[in-house]
Length: 428
Ligand SMILES: *Cc1c(COP(=O)(O)O)cnc(C)c1O
Image 1: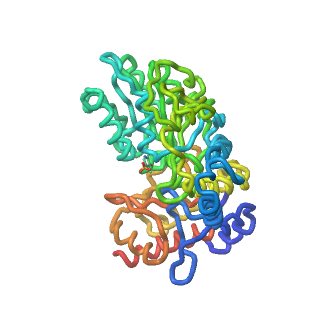
Image 2: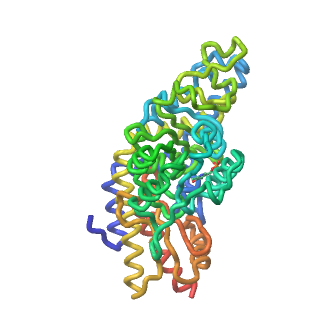
Image 3: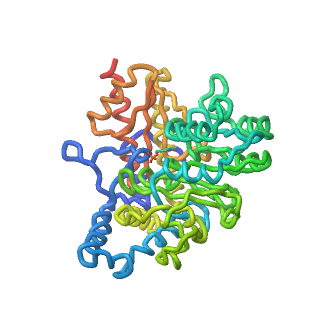
């Protein structure tokens, strides 16, 4: 699309946007009596208006039925999580059986590492992207130490080349090949939280398997943001949170994917709990763990129904939007518009004041742009915040802005860029 740097152009794109009415289904934080420009869905997605209703329904069941809520009512709690599997399967490219929802993300990463990181003296290394989200780094480091290996020897991080901000697939693949004999696991993000780069998960899975390793993905910044084909890509496992692009509330429930080929694999260890027991026999309370079929066999604890309810409210909106296909088309235009406007600012000032480190190819990024400020980054960020533009700041000099196709408009993007431009005069 040929973009224009005018409010009228942005407003016209909003008129033509067939998804624009979804914005109405969200509660947008107010700033001086107006909608703020919320570009922080990469960190915490907005609250759907329907969330209160979905949550209220479960509070009523608790009030009216109390313990019988597990078995009675419109949505017996015992089965409630089943409703979440089809929409999540659609968003991740999985079979519903390969998905379940439980715990929170880092906890699930640990639980999946129990199964998929079983190092021995020959194969003990984990290869991951350099600059992964800190929680993942800590999880890996502690798992490696737990198994008695030295993190500095066992963890291989792949960094961008000198002078580059993002990773080349060929460099990831050759790092995997170089360590082939010693790799136990390849663990990558789908989309890196800092740069917004979308990795070639299919190529990573293929190379990892060729090297004899398991391959897993942390999809915290990916699910609800970019199209995924976990099954076709042959990922062994994946996990994600629901509170970023999936709008399911702060600290919302996490989800996992385990590829069908591992359902009955006897050499995969797991840390068990009663909620992972065969559901038909769970209440016999018998000795000896027998896992439920599919990803459910990794469940540990009683379902947190209130968190499942907020997740359901948010996922139903994705279903109404017809899944990710149209959302992704809009997302590409929306983020492309922000990118264009930032280039316009640089052009207007005759200087690259904002460097976008996110890939410029829309096929290898999602909603987010990560913008390095040449000067006065923190002052610029503060100016945006004072004017109701909500993004986030990552030390030392990066502003992350993520227009989200479900609730952001082209006008939001235009106005955010105007404030970014005006911030330059104020922050000098
Ligand atoms: C957001 C995020 C997390 C957060 O994990 P929690 O357990 O929900 O706190 C972990 N990893 C990645 C890659 C993330 O983007």
